[in-house]
Image (cartoon, rainbow, N blue to C red):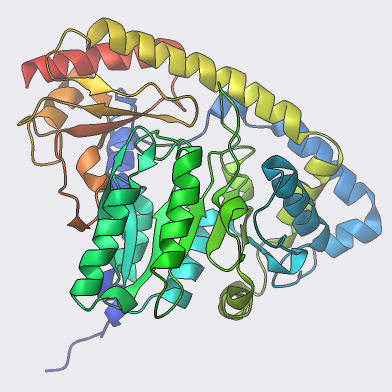
Length: 421
């Protein structure tokens, strides 16, 4: 008897994101203090700035009508020009040719760009090299197209160049180098490790990618979603500024973390040879990302509303980060084998627990934590399927949503749970 429906191979590759279950738990048990979801601070969402920018768009009747109409596939030209100008100003000197506005594509958040790149670059069985740990939503996207994720070790300066070199040499010896399509990094305050790729490693990583691009280009996908959320220290130039030929580094950025996730405006700066394929695929999907939202963000930048909002975010998040680090010092510092990094930006703290303590969904800690009233992201979700071994004694903590008081309570509860486990 025939089955009632037949799913595609892609549907079988895809699976639910781990964060979905954690969000469900937070909803059905509202008493839990969630240090899991990487949401932005509800109290700092820019209602007034958004109202002012939207009113300025709609008050100009011709512009309002244009904003409410279909836009171009690549996106609203003034916004593309604005984000490119800001990117170049932030980076300063470029090692290679300057990107043009034709290489900028606006998307519905940076995740849409990552999905487009997955569809354009990857066939089932292709490989993408990532930091171990890395952004678990990206790992889910790779799995959904049948690609293989390979983890490379990191340290306090980010992905280790020697380890990346060795991994590429192994793939070459195994006859798989042609299947390595990209290297993915979150170069600023990595989600989840909180590490920022050092200046020396940025140049080294791009050089390694170019050196091993023997049969075809191995692209470097630089996910810079957290770049504006720096609380101390100087900014660093993007990986694109070290791309001497301009054909290796793909830049992915977004306004989701720095302005509003609900607006859903992200963008990519692509090597010239990828612009056509990505634009063609995008046209088959959305006929152009939300046009009104692009006009809105253009008005935010035009009216000088973006920088004050980012400054307010930095002040708020710096206070929350300090609250989490102080609470960790108070409630976890005395537990042998517990370690954490002290980030200078982003929304996360990466926690390492004693060897043998399983913080994953099959371990005992997560139930102890919920019994104490707190929930976290198990770090094992953040490890690629191959390469560097998965570590179950790790946790990702987010300080973005909760108040400093709740952060302190949550860490105190987590300390009790770790001792109980």
